[in-house]
Amino acid sequence: MLTGLPPRILEYLTTTVLTFDADLRLTSINPAGEMLFEVSAKKIIGQSLSDLLPHSRRMVKALKDTLESGHPFTARGVPLKLPGGKTITVDCTVSPLADGDMEAALLVELTQVDRLLRLARDENMLDRQSANRAVMRGLAHEIKNPLGGLRGAAQLLERELPDKSLREYTRIIIHEADRLRNLVDRMIGPHQPLKKRPVNIHEVLEHVRRLMLVEIPVGLTITREYDPSLPELEAEPEQLIQAVLNIMRNSAEAMQNQGVIHLRTRAERQFTVGHKRHRLVLRVDIEDNGPGIPEEIREYIFYPMVTGKAGGTGLGLSIAQDIVAKHGGVIECRSRPGQTVFSIFLPLENGHG
Ligand SMILES: Nc1ncnc2c1ncn2[C@@H]1O[C@H](COP(=O)(O)OP(=O)(O)O)[C@@H](O)[C@H]1O
Ligand SMILES: [Mg+2]
Image (cartoon, rainbow, N blue to C red; front, top):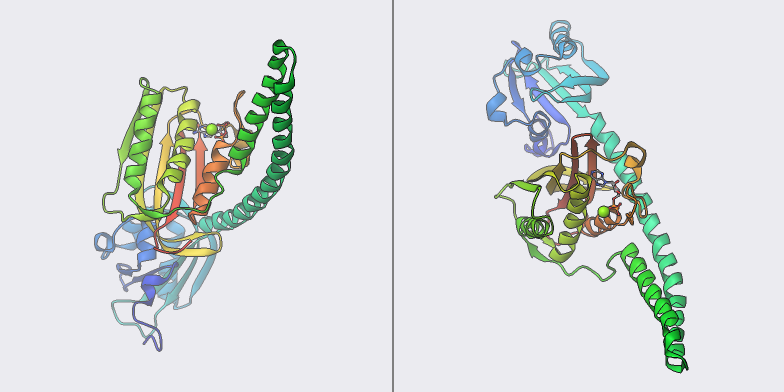
């Protein structure tokens, strides 16, 4: 039947493929479908269409019509309420399988389009961020060179000063030069190539958790929901610690050190970062129940120097994104009052990125 195609091809499709029998009971679902419905095939095979999608009358009707008329049906941008309660938007094609057996009378293909939109945005965002980093690097270089000269000259001057009380001024020059240099270094992030080794993500998270609980001994609760079956990833743990720490500090600050941070890990299949699709990525969610990211900066929080705080540098998230990008991954964020989630996605293939 599948001339020339390997029989397991459906497993690799990112499009959801479902088949229904003539009584509109689900007879098969591919892994992309299991991901979309967030349920295992075992659990839902045999279910009737109306049980599967109790709130999507339009879809149910379309399938019934196709079955009766024998005409294929296509619709774009259909809202679909999933059994878990989430509503997504899909493009949908329903084809009658005329020569199909009783097992498969209808073929349904679903492509989640809100996800595609998001991925497109990712690509833009990644491009913009890397352009941004290039500008920052150039700028940093231009600042650091004269700064070195300035500091050196102040030191020489200090030695020659006849009156020790004047040293106060050279101290200020040197101190401020150091502060600026520090800021610039942080702006461009760590620049050495990554020293990757196999890392257990949970050790990274536990490390940060301990640090946070030492920093904020009362008021902050950090709960965990780890998937212990996750494999190790190739990464530089010190840098991942920095990235997670930056995100968690923001959460604690937003909640004024009073609240709950929830850490969650899981694996995701077939995930695209920029132009590259990965079979398996590790996902870390850092969720807080604080006030949420101020609306007016929500789109820009990953840019350097964007801050919602009086004394903020606006560098934390830009550095975190930089670190994760160097590991071939991406950080995304969803936020509303009472729930802010930063998700770090890190590819799990060995030797790539
Ligand atoms: N969990 C969060 N809840 C609310 N706002 C947040 C959260 N994380 C980040 N932000 C917002 O994003 C801004 C940028 O964060 P960041 O890049 O770390 O810089 P900084 O912390 O120095 O302001 C913060 O100032 C804050 O307004
Ligand atoms: Mg910060």
